[in-house]
Amino acid sequence: MASASATVSSTTSPSTTTTTSPPQPVTIAFAGDINFEGEMGTRLATDPATAIGPFTDLLTAADLAVGNLETALGSGGTPENKQFTFLAPASAVDALRAGGFDVVSLANNHGRDYGPAGLEESLAIKEAQPDHFLIGIGRNDAEAYAPFTATIRGQRIAVIAATQVIDSELVESWTATPTQAGLASAKNADALVAAVQQARTTADTVVVYLHWGVELAECPTETQQVLAQQLADAGADIVVGGHAHRLQGAGMLGATFVGYGLGNFDFRASSAVTRQTGVILVTVTGRHIDKYEFVPGIIHGAVATPLEGADAQAAVEGWNSLRLCTGLS
Image 1 (cartoon, one colour):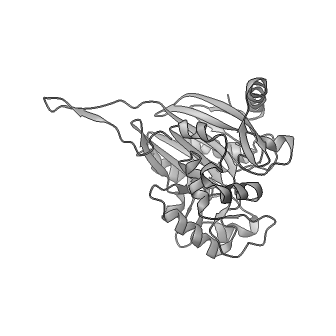
Image 2 (cartoon, rainbow, N blue to C red):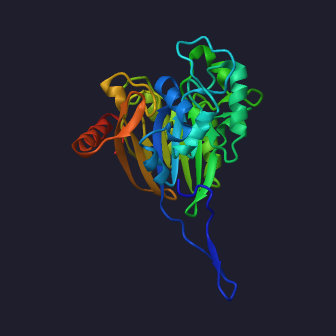
Image 3 (cartoon, helix red, strand yellow):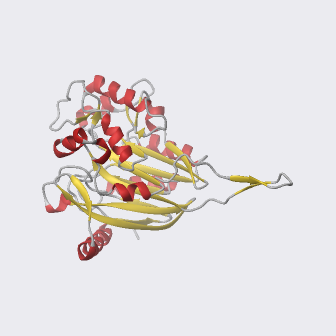
């Protein structure tokens, strides 16, 4: 990121008249699922500064970079009774920052994998960050839905995170409420819409980063499409997300950019489809989407690596073809 904390510059003339530079386009990079199991855990232990891998330069060059950390944070707690549970040490935050990320969501179906004690550790790590780097969890629902905010190139950007994916038997215990710590839930569409509407009152650009959809599905579900429209109607300018562990289509829903599936990023992938990855770059000025592009990659082991030449061109064409079943333009 160039300057997430930069504020609008102003100059004072000899007559003491103050002028403010007009907002400039902001480029936001979006990456998909990340955790620090297996190979990524080894990379983290070896050197957090290089753990994210070859996409670091692209993420760092963007004005803002957003991703999904699919794990609980800390060193303790008790694993939930579910098929897969993930846990990463606090040094994962150092790796993500060094890798170019500016804000990362913990609102997903692994964000509370290590029970109440694990959640307490995750919250403590979140609260140790000076810039609201981790979003989508909180000690109550207000904290969980609270956006990351920054003024970049004269634009006020807000990023909200929520999950529509929580194991059915865990929904009650995992969901943040006025009196319970937990995750921001997109199952409660009214609460998420209210968070977007609130952010809209002070932000020039409102982004919603979601965990949603069906694993390995090529096309978004009707539920995803309904929620995307609700969020667009509420004032979201960009709606992106993941969970399917494969790429899904992206495009315009009226004036809102929607990316249904970011796929895996730094995450173990074992098939041709789940190894397809990349970063979506969206350039926005206020509420106007100036342009968007997909920078394709391939996962080697568990590490996202950019593609080049003919392989990159073919991957972009494949990504564009995914739009056909999304209802997006």
